[in-house]
Length: 319
Image 1 (cartoon, helix red, strand yellow):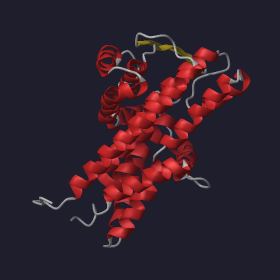
Image 2 (cartoon, helix red, strand yellow):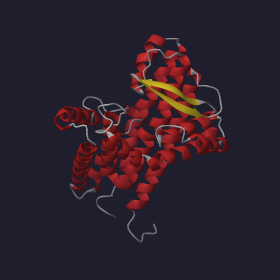
Image 3 (cartoon, helix red, strand yellow):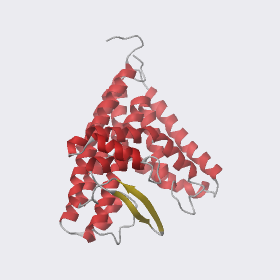
Image 4 (tube, one colour):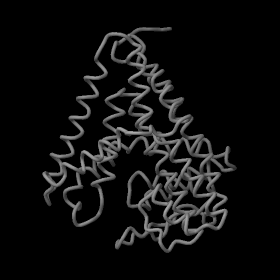
């Protein structure tokens, strides 16, 4: 068995278990530390230039991947590789925190606490919530859970399965750079172009896998796989993001809800086409959304562990 790949499947399983039990690491989260570093460096490298943005993004991703490759190759024993993979998986996954925040939003809405729910939405997305009513807050929560089921769970597991620690680290670096730079704003329109396009690329297959898993698991939340696939194929492209639209359309079909509409981000208004045929989301629908996201994440973990195990097998092995 390859020394580098040894223990990848077990590490992914243990790391996902840590995320489920403990949520995000507390006290110096490595992803937050990376984000602070990028923010500190940005004033020294920023330019209103796509070329500069490409160089910066490739520099950050390349440096992080190189460190991850070196860390994975240190020492011949499988034990340290399991530990490293587990710790890295725990650091880059965000499934437990995502579902915790969605559930907290449901509780606030159920209690009629709009003043508490509006600022809480910032834990899920960057949408301007100051004037949103109960239904719009519920829609924002459902859409955020749908999109981030891929970004925070399915995609990192997929990259970890095929590329180990470098895949986990590289994916999270790209995703973090997109969150910081990939905005449609005067400052980042050109400088952040590379971050946004690279994030689209690395999420292309994971987002579609999320859609397939959502359709397959739709009956667990009272949905229909056939109806989910129909909505996914029909409405998946009615979204500014080539990937988020697939996830949101699949969730809309599985939950029999209607997503999409007008979203405000600061001074910018973004209108998204309708996704799905059902009623608009209400607070009670958040619990079903959380259950669906959890099922999709569990299925993605099974696939990731199985894929990593198969890739770990020595060539010609029949065991």
